[in-house]
Length: 406
Image 1 (tube, one colour):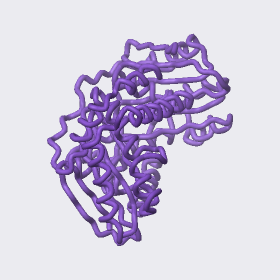
Image 2: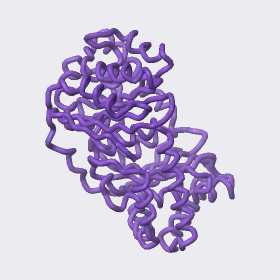
Image 3: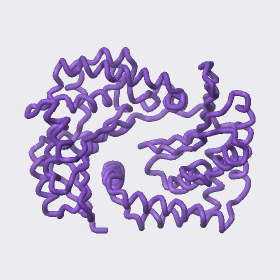
Image 4: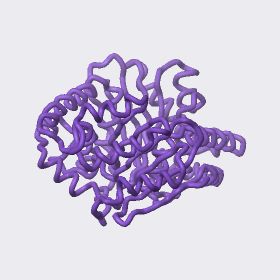
């Protein structure tokens, strides 16, 4: 896997991987998300992500919204708790247009007052839509339980009150203090030569002044389990069960990812899906997830079911967790679990947009790129003993938190 890496004097890094095909992808990932906000700035990172499309010193919002669409491309963005990303997909002959557009909106946006006023209404509607969807809202509220009173626990969107308070001055201050060049990565894939990718990277990013951030995120306070039940007057009960887990740099992360996939991953053969849905028909959706952050992580189980069978579903889940804590997987089951994850990894590498963003985040967080072979080796190295040890640590009943909507 021949990957081009380059770092400019201002600290912005490039990762480019040449692939076959007519389509090219590129993105800019900034190591700034909702956990970098103060209480008064709650929702600011996401608000800025929206506002980047509202006009620059060179172009108005209509040009930004249509420039790539008119050539069959797409310009998009997202915000997480630790990153803001702008990314584009275009025909390879339009790659330069995509790089130009991303650099322009990232570093030349003007944040007009009229756009700020309109976007407040849009985002408040987005916030309200979450209140109407308990299956999505419960994920945000669960992390608020896990990290109470901490930036990492706050939801990404903010509150109607915080969003209404935002001003252009606050936006400029946030960007000036949090968009640091040594915490930015430009990533790309496509049938673009290394020479072309590097030339465009230097053209659009080399002139930017250096802004260095030395400090990392604030420390996470000690986790304390909790259990909360809320009356939401919903047709279904919604339930989250979980615990803190391992950070993105923790050596136990591959084993935790493997354990999560066995229990409630994307496959229909996950233990929770078989136990709750396929064998008993008690739930339409049941899944587990593992999110790793800079300095911690969260493991969670979610399911929705009829109110009358909530306790039965929880008992079945505990039975499955107990099996993982007390029974070794055995050679054959472990081999099958590893094979499944290796297949998912290979599919991800064939999906070049996902690969592009994955490489960018890896370089941003770990300052390295793991090849498919590297990742498969890490999965192959996981042992039955590791799985059992992690299960007893993360799935320990006395450490699990609960959030239930009834």
